[in-house]
Length: 204
Image (cartoon, rainbow, N blue to C red):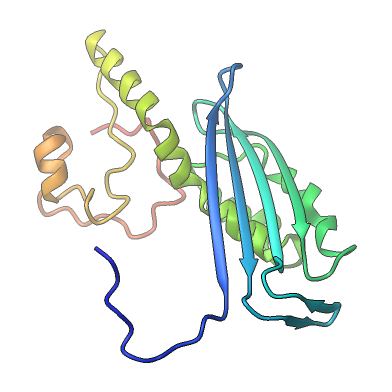
């Protein structure tokens, strides 16, 4: 359903757009291509000059390549539009420091540790932070087929990594009780911060 109408007149000031496209590569890996664009409907004075209305103040692109286990194996970053040309874009190659991280195990903390503060670009790092859930959406069909095959072969089922990752998927809630009763935990109080310990290999 849409948001309710605003209760007060207002003036558009800023639009941020974030887009992520996911691709299955011929070599078996996955590419996540993310883009962040900041645009204002009016001329914007910057220390470096005036940015005309409708022209991006920020346009950041990030390609992260991962394997089937969500390990980051390659990163390419590009800063196409920035407030301070000749300075902001110099940090883009440093985003290769994300190689070696895992999107489902401590990734966001890893971004902060390796590229926080003056080590990185605020907007590029924000763009990186949205990749884990996008990767899960992109690879969900593959995970489902892998789980079904494992169960057909008599293997022990894996605990879905979405459990206890949001309100609907809480382990003591109706979704898990109905669709994954083996993992249902009535009265269980999930940990609040799970970024550092989520694993597809968790067992009951």
